[in-house]
Image (cartoon, rainbow, N blue to C red; front, side):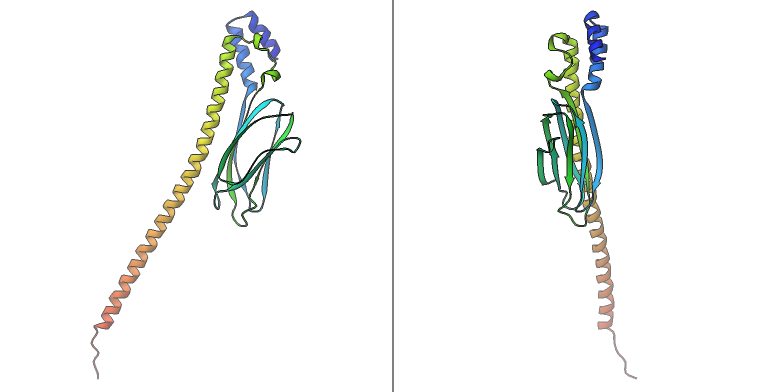
Length: 214
């Protein structure tokens, strides 16, 4: 279908070119994001089928749970490790798929025995390398090339926005947790102050109380 549209683009310089370019862009990039929990001493894995030569980028953020740390490991179809970190709160990775197959991203919470972790993960599967594209460079008009460059830039902006949302969510949770602790600490201090004041009143009254003998 994309080859057919590209041939039409050469015949119609403006309208057909724009239509073909947008149909091309619909298949070039894809972004996926989700939030999930990783139970204590467990591992959660996500799978994605990716074609060879495709640019892949991802980011993760631990928003709640324990010390906000997680183990992350990304492996290819040949079980080769592409990205691996241990006890990290957030991170990013980018790579070019070396072969077609199922790629795996695993998040391990083995360092925790009682606390689950909430992880936000965004995966952006971008366009293939020039050798993997259906159209050759000489078949693409300047307008089509500009639209594809714009699509790539927009995908990067989208990934950056998702990453900033994850950071904002984690910082908001931290701020709300801190505010809650300050509130309860203030309540505890007020109750302790009232209790000490009542104790002092009764103690002083008993101290100055005059005893009468019958």
